[in-house]
Length: 468
Image (tube, rainbow, N blue to C red; front, side, top):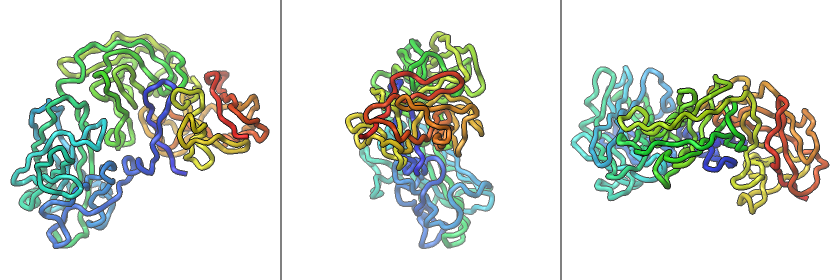
């Protein structure tokens, strides 16, 4: 079964999922192709092929097929870092890509800049110099690229300039003339041994996200409501996935979820499109932002009374903060996710991928059958073992410390038929997964589904479709 990485999107009772067939390269390991040579006819001392930064939107390739040896980032003695300041539209700045390794003698890199909200789109443009080559698209034609994807890489002269176990490449980058929100940079680098072959070189990849230094909003945010992202019930749950609604959270018409660069280190960002959510003064991990809604995860280490603030342009001269909104954090608040705009529970079928839903609700969905094992998704179910901090991605099975019970169509499911209850693996830690075998005696149609925990019940009216 392929695990699912969930990112909550707009709508308090919706959940959008992305298969880890795509996301695995974002979170754990990146597939490999050739990058930079170490001085042999097999290498690329004048610059690698395009699409080699490890960004999954370009295919996930980096340098490790041609430079055979350890996987990217495996040798902990070295690293790649990207330095980029908050940008001002249309104002050129220098982006620095530093490759380090104590034994390396020759160096190379490739860098891209993309819209964080749509990584297929080029963000701004790079300037060719005697040390920086800029090529366009999959074909790698020379710049100017006229809006096509750009790849900045080394020239032959630049590959020999490193010293003291490191090399910093300086790339001139001009942002777009308009505010485009956050920009994601991806880079790959080669710390090569200059041995005349394609072995013994160390490959590194990294990414970073920068924001518009002018800020995304000059208006003061206001908060109308704080509630469960699954059920819409007021207030927050311990480590629970939560929505805050209001105004001036960002420019009208803009919305996005967390990007692959932002979760590459197995944790969700605490700032998105120039907005931050503070819970009792501490930044909370964000999964989605728009002008009127932000989805975030409540703290792992706090309970009882709480205040929530939305801050635009935090730390900048034009910072704007909402009035503190009074809320609370409960140890438990069981809530079931549903498919957007419906009462149909967000669930997957026995194959682990097909949505359990009528096709009119989710294209490609199928009702469950009595006796099927299905996976349902929830939040607000409390502590797991092991426990994960808010914003973390749960990397392995983590059962609930306080067990739940499940009722379907008025039938209590035997505890032995609840096959797993805990954190959803490879998902943000506030998302829980319950694998349950449906009663064989269920009738056809939409059957009510309830989970209970610690004397509390999930929201009413949630159903699961059962085939005749």
